[in-house]
Image 1 (cartoon, one colour):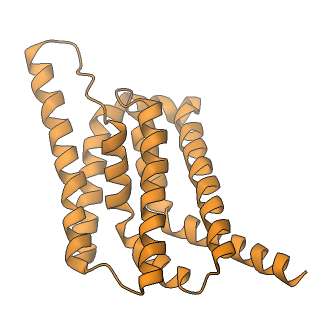
Image 2: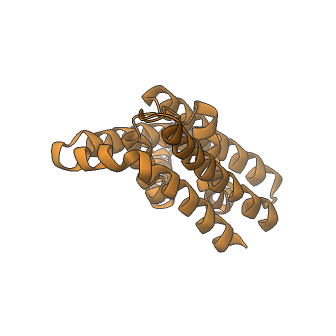
Length: 193
């Protein structure tokens, strides 16, 4: 009974950790889902791989009892800024060439990179939390984070598919996503710079 209670407590803590540290990620996911040029497959794969990378790195750091240097986290903020500027520039120059909007969505690798850059501060929260977890507790945490990622993706998709909200996001998605990417990067740099 004690082991089951302990695993339930681990699951509850993991759910809280995921929700609190990934609220900003939900906003990014809504912007990504609203961008018709970025495929749903790229978003799903990139998000799962990104969250998996953040979680794995946090587990490794917790086991090594190290912390990621601030300079490394700050440098990650440059990635979404560069992605946003590149996307904006490609769409702008493509529209100048012809009247059809460019289909320059993000790849799964770009979404993964964005997820890691946007979640780099999560490592600072996860690492100390993971130092006290048992192997079973870490496994429960990984499962909960996977479920949380699926829920976040579903919520973002639901917001975009909502008739009132989704139409507005879809109309502005191509313009909004580059701005969201740059804003995420600036926040990462300012927060850790």
